[in-house]
Image 1 (cartoon, rainbow, N blue to C red):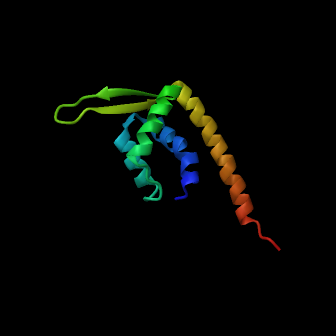
Image 2: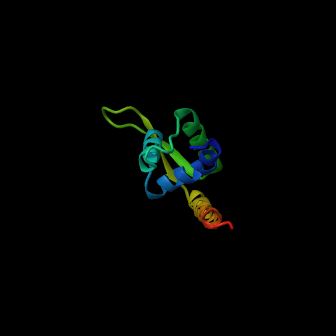
Image 3: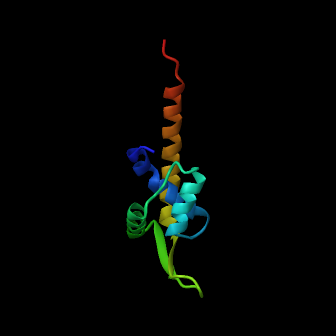
Length: 109
């Protein structure tokens, strides 16, 4: 997928996945890849710095969870501020997609 397209939509994808429930970083990356049928793949080198930035902005909150027999994982959840940002990003995305579709569908004479 085009790097710039991916760059502009990654926050939306992550926040959307966290809307339903808390997830750890590896799960977020795996869900994005799976739900996009492999079209969008986030590498660790870009995923975790983005999660840290979202946390610093107050849009997500992370906490370490330890379970017997498993490695320690940091789970991220959407905050109230993150929900507001996500709602705005969804509106913007829908408007953008609709505008692109209008242009693409237009038959030129």
